[in-house]
Length: 304
Length: 259
Image 1 (tube, each protein chain N blue to C red):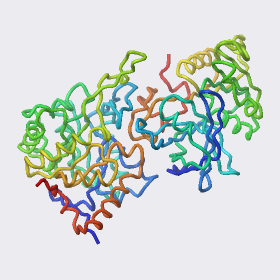
Image 2 (tube, rainbow over the protein chains, first blue to last red):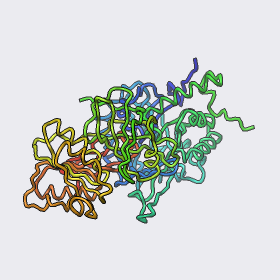
Image 3 (cartoon, rainbow over the protein chains, first blue to last red):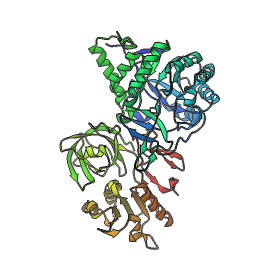
Image 4 (cartoon, one colour):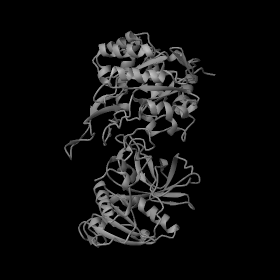
């Protein structure tokens, strides 16, 4: 029997497969398709201080092996989350991690403080990497000083596991990783989407209402793998890897590069039950390769 | 009413070519259908087409519960739909269905269905549904040209069919809103169901408002997932941005912020 469990910053996940924020709603929508309790964890849709309508339609453009989105953190705010969403998801048999977003340090701190009070939420994922909002988001995640500042401010009010999600839209991902570790991050998740754009040549106009958006899907996997590998070598903080994972082989590649767990994102749109197939696929791989504990895969890439 | 969503491989029973740009896929389900309502849609997975990354949404065109088959009316628009047009009898197609809400049952018998282009797809199913509720709607269908006029016999089973073509080669010349039924001072209908390009639906909505006639439209916004998690297909409503794939695709025009 293979041991699929992973301990990340003191939090025990039944397996390393989780779902990425913004691709899994609050988990509810997937209950019609699968037993979400079999997942290692669910990273729910971003929560901000106040209601956000998000960006105007069109928000999506299909691209080669991927897609661009510019949703813009549409959500009903932290009050609504605590009152209306949390009671419905707190007893799902898996870890629920809340993605916390904001436009100012104060907003991040406010939301993190509120989520800290929710007993069944063991961790937050600080989103300093959303490319689709005018203020905040990625602005915090591309300058090392600001990344340290916002992480440290949240660290003061958030007492459980603090994960920070990094943006790939930087020159040196390791500098950003070190910056959030300095701020007190327990876990690093990477990568968020890559800033990109799509053009309709016939109409000579951008496809997205915001002109630019965030690229996800298999198109970004090689970049994500490289960044996981670099960060794994640079810091001793556990990593949750994501970026174009479509199947178990992709997931295993991320673990070999140094991720302790992975998130499935855009693939959920195409096959809503894909995350459980990835759990099964990892188990099959471990049996084939006679690997007893999935943790043996983490950073096990052989480079010599 | 619990409506279950399925992710399922269906078998192609036949592919019917209607004209150069449109075809119908008739698909056999491996088990008994759940309840499917008119206006609901499916998300089809296009295999072996590298440039087609996401599923493609298609309205349910008709359902035969006896034979356990459903039909999709598809317009060839790009690589994905071109690929689907090449499917043959016996091939399989993976669908997520039934998705979204549905047209409501009217509280009047004076019903008009208006469809343009590929937007006619959900209206055949709706016409059949209305018939089962003893309503015989008027059905106004707009096409570009005579060559694209199709399935009139099918629609005629359920109500009186009127046609417009943009070039006047069949029915009345012009677009659906140019049809003479809209030129009268009083509109004979108390309820309109409409599906087609945005510009057409907005024009029909304007006429409906003018006559204080209740009107539902089925939106075709581009989407990634189709089941409510990506938030890409939203439309502004009086409740803020709502998802076309869950709160829609059918919206009463009173809820939309169309002007």
